[in-house]
Length: 60
Image (cartoon, rainbow, N blue to C red; front, top):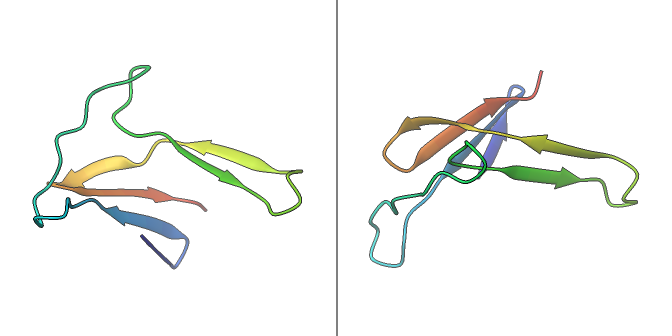
């Protein structure tokens, strides 16, 4: 996972360096929950599929 210029990018690979096949859950392939260290703020995001194993979401 990386964060650059307001965009979070997630690359998924298994231990054999293959891209896992995700199943849709609650109408989305991925749910990302980001919580502040004091637990006062949280964001429920849905990164979009960019390519095999790659997902991204703008945070701006």
